[in-house]
Length: 369
Figure 1 (tube, rainbow, N blue to C red):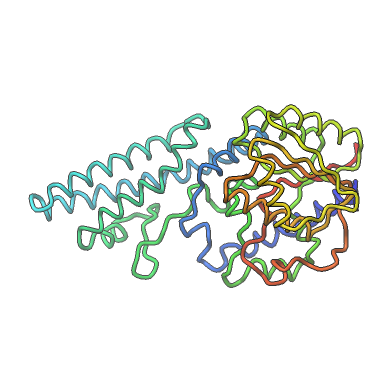
Figure 2: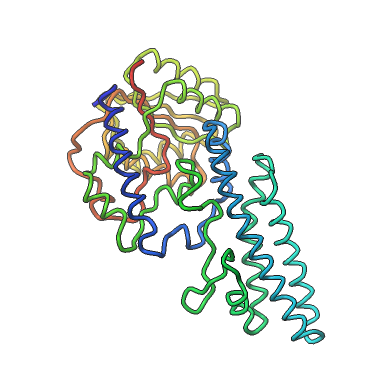
């Protein structure tokens, strides 16, 4: 499958997956996004690229963070009320502890002021956002030295406050980038993009009821113009090695193929081109050996007449492991077509593993002009 037929199949499958996610996610009332997930430094690099590539992301992110700012400010008011009560109750007996509480509250106040402002979406400012998790954790841990303080947070919190119990403990906060769904969309962190819940209803189980393995693989691709794919590679070239991410491009136009090769050759380091004449299918172990041998500052470019779903799963597994081991350099796979049907689904799909390794990959289908 290739060309417009492939692009249409990708759009149909992506719509089916998105519809399933919208219907299922949150139904268990114990969603992963409400369980303390957060964006890290690699996730912030993905956001930085997303803001450059998608002009709509900035507006969506601003509106969502303004809503979260209301919650952060409401929590600050609750903390201050509890702190006043503790000062009245304990006074001289807990002078040092109350002083530290005042300092931690000031950190929260400064963050509340920052997230409520019209700050620029620069790398430095985005980096400040991930401090929220530590600020919250440190303050709540310190409050635990005062008997009944966590209960006071819950009881005194207003409708906009985030403080609530889950069982006998305070519930973790929602991810800062979650407001009625993920604000980041396709630019969410890898651990979120690859995660499929174990709740009830089960997201992966629902996906398997509505689509087969090949459809699910297609649903993780994006139909884009050649200009968008080129701009994504050019942006990573501009931002530097830390922003490189693997690219899988299905494209049948030889002219576009050479344009992509030319852009990749502009990167620093060595660029090695490998052709797989029988189609791309390397095991995750074989790929890891190649990645490890090639080095972090160089780029591997694979070309092949076709690639199928199981091979993309093996590639996804290898890339995730290489990312975790901090050995991943540049890697681009360019194939003419998508091989369907698969001879068999990948075991990760068949065994309903919570982590499906395609969600965080940049997989593009380029239809003919």
